[in-house]
Length: 317
Image (tube, rainbow, N blue to C red):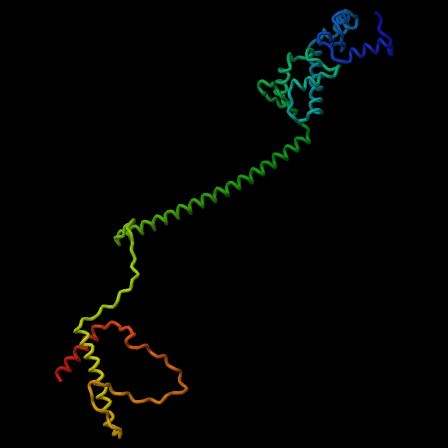
């Protein structure tokens, strides 16, 4: 059957039918031609063009397979670099993107039997980073080995080392501060323990025990009242001293020869003191409270002994 003329309706229809991907078993990699059915593939295999190309490949089949493998690898890596860069992508999903091109190199023409073997080869050669996700399958990401990328990576590693060094120094400083704080805390604890032990020793010496109640008495005690005989002695001593003062004043007046008659001597009355001129410019003195309201101070032993001796003398005379 003759081929349809270019531009004819038959030719346009054939192109529309061949626009999509065909079956892999009806594709000839040597001639790079896709057939639509098995009959067309048989006719192509029997054609003179196909036979001639197969004779050329049959002379050195290993060379042809290596060429197809190299072409497949270069196309695969170029599409991976341009489409995804260094991102991680599922290997099978990316292969579906790769075979969308109708004239791509098929896997059955290469030296790799399956896509998994091809992914392992990429990982062994260091062309891609291969990740085994278990049930999800293999994932790959492109490795940028260009000089610019290597310089960027070196700068990044240098920055990381610098940051790591700064972090280590900071960690060392923090550790030193923690050690100093712990040491100071231990010294403080020792000092507190020593003070507590000293307090316990003092408490043991003084006989005070923890848990005992302490009672405080804030009442004021009255001075002890002397007995009746001591009161009488005090009265006698005070009367004797008053009498001695009166006798002394009378004798002084007689010695001076004053014309003023002396007051009669009496044991019941006290001698009147001479009247002193009033000082007008002097400040007014504060009046003392009555003797009854004044609080008597407690008498010492020396005063008590002197009063007793004076009383004895008066009894003798």
